[in-house]
Image (cartoon, rainbow, N blue to C red; front, side, top):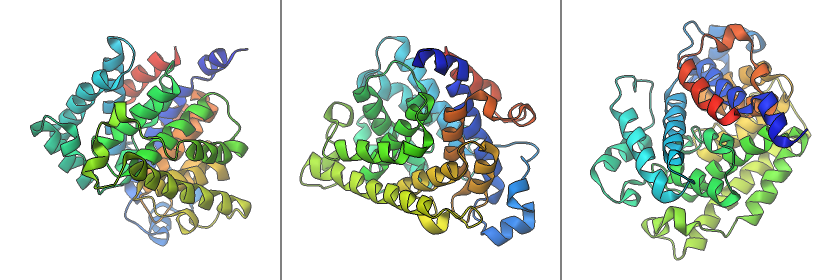
Length: 341
């Protein structure tokens, strides 16, 4: 059986996008709470129930916006930065103005989207000081779209981040998040995932995607594009090393944020989501519940953990009584069906 056939049978895109939204909905009520408060509100973390209704946050909304824009960009041919920028800009601005954009969105996304509406040069809107997790909470579609070259996938992952979060660590963490989703969708074993991601980070540590990013590095005040991007890869390497160290002595009952960070910034969101997923790689609901019962940015941590678990296990990872109740289900399934096919 070929990789493509296995992917179609598994329905990795359906599993990943559904898992992302479920994690988002599970973590929404626990965001901004410490673990004792979550336990008092929700009961034992291994028994956390999906809220009714299963409302998501801006994490899922912006994932759908990015997915739609990638679909639009590829309707006219191969994915290129020239084809991608305007659809992503339009979708992000539409999200900014949506009456449903009332789920505690991040200030960086709001500021950048407001500027994207008024400036012709997207680099001028980019918040180059910010490496918030808004950069990579939404990037899963880039890992799920079939047929992209390595350069297209990396460039697109970094570009979508840079439209709002222009810090080099936000770019590198988004690239790595998309890479993790891709590897898991293609059948990579979870046990070797961190090693593969660290190798990828090392190989790309000095590679600046000029075609996709233009002169973004100048807006950050770095001396060269290589100096700019290497800062981001170095911070992500440290975050991945922390995951490796945590998993050498796993402690499932301890808040994962204590070992790999609270997840408000991009590299920590990636690290702690991977930590939660890799504690329970074959038990996706437990991974989601562990991610949602954390002191940090629980909805973003859980949405990424769900994206990883769903990419690994496919659509069958999630119980029907959960997946049927998720907000925006039809939008998620529409995008996923296109990419699973």
